[in-house]
Image (cartoon, chains in turn blue, red):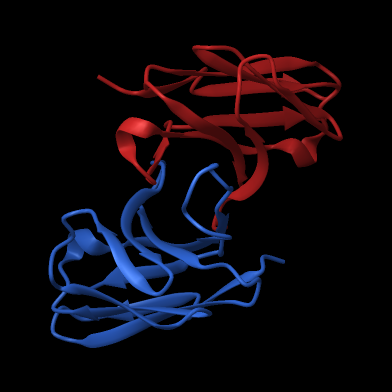
Length: 115
Length: 111
């Protein structure tokens, strides 16, 4: 079992719906990440939060809105998604994002399908 | 041009048949190289971090090595449960805190 917990595991939504993905870790990590992974492709970075502040936004469309309410929680709010947004959304955390590089630990993801 | 290239794309082994996976990189200012294992429908599972050329790490049947331009993941006497996609990722000065992933190697071990 992974120490990064993501809910829900599966989500089906229409293009006009609003939903949220949730990620939680209790390892005391201060860097948290959202990735998008399409089938048979590696994960692609979307956002990085460092000490609860957004530090990297990889030019992600505004229909994806991240939020970090506290050091243990990371949310991804979804609105007006497109069918091409269907993917596995992965959350990861690391002790911090400063040098030296520290490993990121991933959750098992939310499988998102857009109708 | 890809900064991180993994080969082969897919590898089929018989149980007990040792082999190696390759990860070559062209980034400058390497800060760390990471190996992950990913099972279908799951998130990547962290295996190793390597920081400098000459470094080696071992875990059960897996051994990771690093040179200035590539890393190898050696699998000794694999078992069917080693079947997974193995991902290599690098963090480098030119990319700040971003992990750059290779496309992965799909490993199938048959009994």
